[in-house]
Image (cartoon, rainbow, N blue to C red; front, side, top):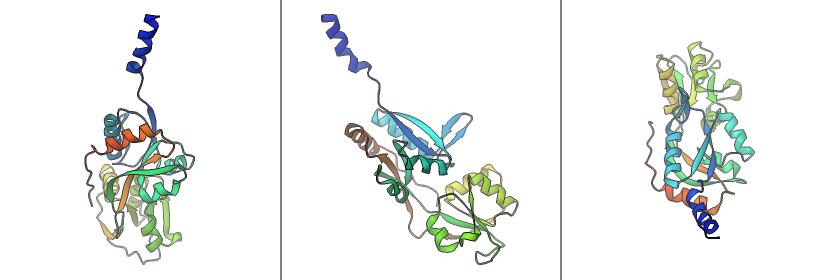
Length: 224
């Protein structure tokens, strides 16, 4: 009887930390895979969060459009999204903490004008909504699956501009050794807020751990 009681008391010592499913959008420099290793700004934030909270995160790297679909089916427990995007799924998700700010921009080749009829602008599907809706007609918009694809289309002149965050555009441009100078013509008047978007149904104890851990995160300042 004493042995059974002793083993029962030891169970909490060997209990494993809770595992949360985390969705990452495959967009450098925020999250990407390099030589089989996950890297990026959002990955670093979430890794620190998991460590501080004493939780285990299982990362799932999605193309951006697929992560949106995953959110619609309430799949990941956590993801980093812009606040307006997180609130689209408020039935299942809620905003926990603001992490950083970023302002999308429209980049154009120096030789073109956005008012020209033959100018085509590329964007990652579902991004840059405010700028695109305001300045780009639907028939001039090209949805791309990655910024790498957008850079290749700029090289071949199938695109004359792109809408993207500066950090995303410059990361893809440097990786592809794209040297043509592009002009920044327009940017969001108000920066977008990137937030930790968490599932409402998470246990309250897990939420408390995440909230306490978030207070210890390092401040992030993106290039503008």
